[in-house]
Image 1 (cartoon, rainbow, N blue to C red):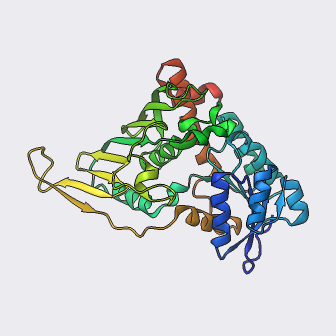
Image 2 (image 1 turned 180 degrees about the vertical axis):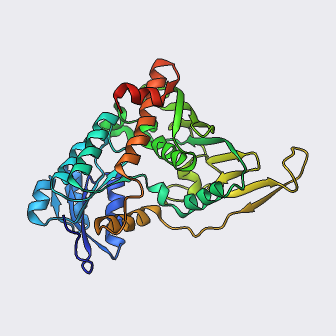
Image 3 (image 1 turned 120 degrees about the vertical axis):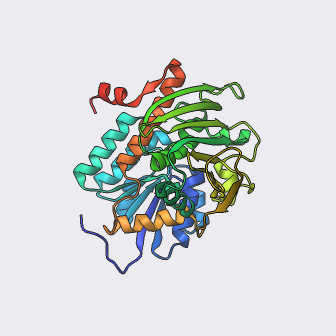
Length: 358
């Protein structure tokens, strides 16, 4: 497949007009390099939202492609539909950005990744936080060695999702829950920061709402690098400690001057999102005074940066920053977390992949 013209704006279609789909649509309308080709969503709400934006509306990708072939497709449908929708785009030879998780199970994700590779069609996975300038600045600090040997990381995701959030049925079913919907972002960032996960152990509870999915989960991760991590999460706790509340990434959430990640090494520690770097004034010693500095970076909307990157991917000017293979690797960790919570056992990722023949 040849790359689109370098001069004309790229025509982008969005499949799914839910919360994240609407944010993608708004981003496309605001980006000078793109035009909104179509909103694809069979629901009346999707049709009405498309009309409110003056956009073409279709119930299927086939209908949209027949009317005006898009240069790229963003799949923002429910998790369970990601693979089928992305495979349809690949079969039509259209580059695709698939919202996270790339699939609701690793086996389906592997089939999608293989299909993209066979067709030579790029897949970008919507782990948009990797595009955040703050995260890139944090990665530079970690790679610089200023924290010494990284030993441990703590992440907190405590939010209070309203009952209305669960009026959409799939959010109460298997394949939803904060592990799949929210913590997959944190796991992806931790892989970006610390490398591959070697083993996981998890416990979860649904005691707040009694839905089929968890509302609270505690996760232990051991990385091949030796880093140990904890993720403490609940979508039923009112608190200021979460990515959403602390980073200001999504203006819909009230901003709190708190942290969501703490990263510790033999030479110092780093708080995210403030990028507060703590070190001893002279040498590492708990009796020595601590000094702090704030690592500078220029804030920017990571979803906007991701869309710009998708444009480069469509034009074959860049390889996907978060490829299908990366999305699959993160999903395998999430599956291991869920398996551990069910069994009560520690799950070793290398043994899981050997059993699957990967």
